[in-house]
Length: 384
Ligand SMILES: *[C@@H]1O[C@H](CO)[C@@H](O)[C@H](O)[C@H]1NC(C)=O
Image (tube, rainbow, N blue to C red):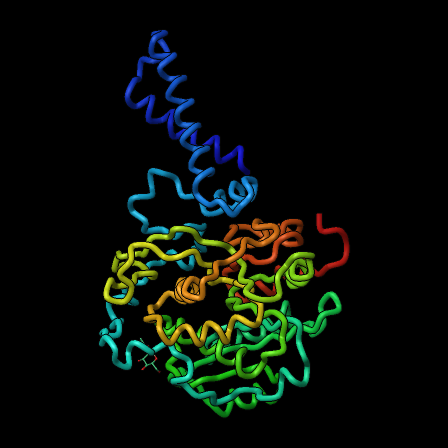
């Protein structure tokens, strides 16, 4: 992967060179000038890695960088997110922005603590579920009340097994309030599966930070004995075996540990057409601190209580994963790259049985896809 990236760096230099000097191949002085420039390009490229982050091994940096790589010529715009986006997220929802009012900011007022989870109350909380099962890992899946199809797909696939690699895993769904969602139905659903947590905030896209913080609050207050937890989106393929194996690798910390797909130096999206738009009033800095992409991040279960506490003093904004990045930074911590960073994948266009046996996360298109891929993935026989 590293050499590939070096290749693209060279290519960029070459393209610039050709643009300036279309006749270079005819004249020797230009040829040596070209070689010199190429060498300079490579040097700058190498120095970029050398000085960007001292805490990582070079090999790690290269493979991590290549995951988040955005070509130089696209950097000034920053409209696209740093990873390959599933087509369903590319539909920039104009309606979403036009019809959405961002909360007005009242410094020091209630708004300031909008994401502080203890402003909200649990309606369904499965009080004893953790004491009863004593999990090693809790998977917390934010999902809307009406999205029963997504919950059922997960219950049939990666949420099905209660014991994985001889570790107890608990899969729970976090819901807010949604207009038209029948509370009795939800209570029945929970009676049957005992896997719903519901809180009384309004469940909208802009409120995902509240949802994440309520997840943290539930873990801190209802499940403090679990060793690890993961916030994982409902549209994910999760290779749960590989995740448990990763967490049991020697040297994986049991405290102050947060991992996933790391996002470095991500600029805040200021384009109002974007799904990721954040007004300057909510987040003034041009960049986010290092954070883990919201599709699926894993943490030691001491962190939820710390996040809840520190969130009292951090102004909420609508990008939940970057907000967790802010909390992490304020705690004096930073996310750790996973042992094998290429296991946390965002989006790839096609299903590959071999690849799915090696990764931990993948973003999918639908619950149908999850069920189809899973049933193929679980067929006996070699994966590769
Ligand atoms: C977010 O949730 C709060 C609390 O329920 C609610 O007052 C607010 O209207 C919601 N905001 C959006 C944008 O949905």
